[in-house]
Each structure stands twice: as structure tokens, then as C-alpha cells.
Length: 108
Image (cartoon, rainbow, N blue to C red; front, side, top):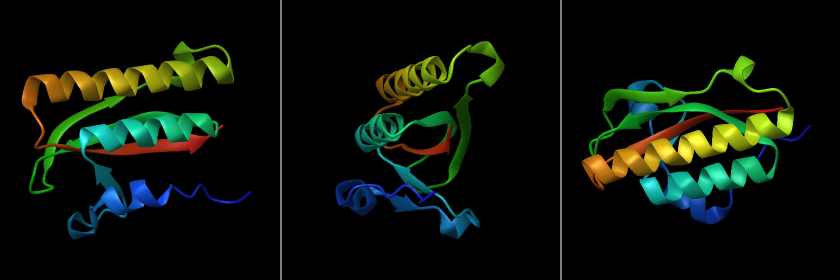
């Protein structure tokens, strides 16, 4: 099975978290939502994510979803997507534009 490759637009807008010793990337709120939409389109489930400030330092805010709450694979992908997007929109509405979001996902 080949690894998921994000579209160039999402790759170019991503910020590396390598300086934290994390081999992940984070996006601003709009591109994080685009990434979540892209992941769910290709049957990846968003298990959760973390929030970083404008200096790409952890805020220790995060979200996650438990797999045992959901019955089918399709329902899990949909519910996880809804939860992730809702969290990011609410966080943005409360705290503004200066935050970035990393996404934890897996293929199911």
C-alpha cells in the first residue's frame, strides 16, 4: 500500500515541527480543515491532533476520538472528521488566527 501524498498546496502551506523533535507538520486552521477533508476522502481517519502557537510551540491543547464509540469504518471516518473540524473552528473562533494544528491519522 502506498503512502498518502498531500496535494502541493497543502505541502507548501505546512509548517515543520522538526525543531521540537517531532517528525510531523502543522497547518493554519483553514489548511488543517482542507487536510482533514483530503484525508477522509481517501479513507483515512483523523484520530486527533495538537495545537501550536504562532512560534510553533505546543499549547498542550488537543482533541481525539475513541474508536470504540463508533460502529462502522465509514461512520468512524465521518464522525472523526466532524469532531476534528468542529474543534478547529471553535478553537479558531475563540483564539484567533495565530495557531497551527497537527493531525494524527491512520488508514482504516
